[in-house]
Length: 344
Image 1 (spheres, rainbow, N blue to C red):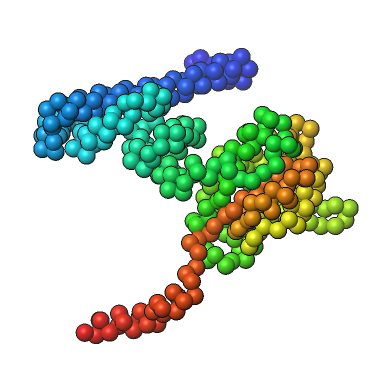
Image 2 (image 1 turned 60 degrees about the horizontal axis):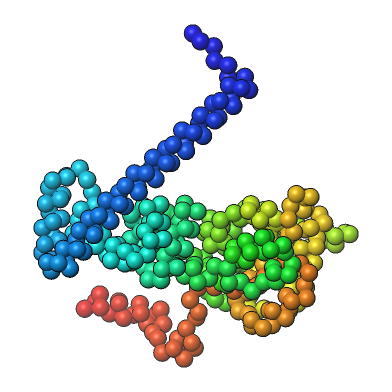
């Protein structure tokens, strides 16, 4: 029996190198197969579109084509009449956009259908494709991000990053923070205490991190700081891998007031002095409020020397107006109504 040099460093280096090569080859093979499938669907869609324009092909012809292709290639999926129509739409909508044509081959067909049918703006389509590639979104996650209007929200937080961070860092930081955050997955009423929201976010930490975006690592809630014997508690502390810095998040119910920026500034100073390592970048702060006056926020942040931003959040669709609530049946009235139906 050959004695393997499992503890020899040169052997381990070769083993690790080969493992990486194999994994990268598998990824390349998967991408290659996907690209070939997308190219096939493109060619099918182009044939259908050309024949429609030349011969007036309609629904019945597409249904017959679907039947014949499925009969000829029973082991292959994807030849339903609905999918053939998607292939035709695929070509029709992307034929004049070479950048999108190149990008679509990088993501699965199901993802392409979601983007094509839900998004009409070319820039937004390209953005969602790039983010899918960058973050490895599943189809369900992609659909959720589209439904939450992520493209419109991303990078729109009110911040002072331009004059508090180096340009290369400020551009990245600005893109990472959204104008508003969707916490509807909590299922909470709009009038909820901030500590309750905070606990609920921790209970749903996976959804919370997904909403925050890629790169955030959760460090703790009600994170304790001691400054010369006095104790202070940060709502939430994160570390961001790409920014290489701590991120302090303060959660506030109601409307933003300038005093929040002063308190956050103190927390950032404490983190920089007590936790930040020499290789870490400057700590960033984010205040999450239910509402904010844009000009008030700009005034409050303009003179601050530490990088911080303000965004809004929502936990649930706003409560119904009082007069509308009073016009609707109460739960007891609903119960009585259904009980009456059962008796009849």
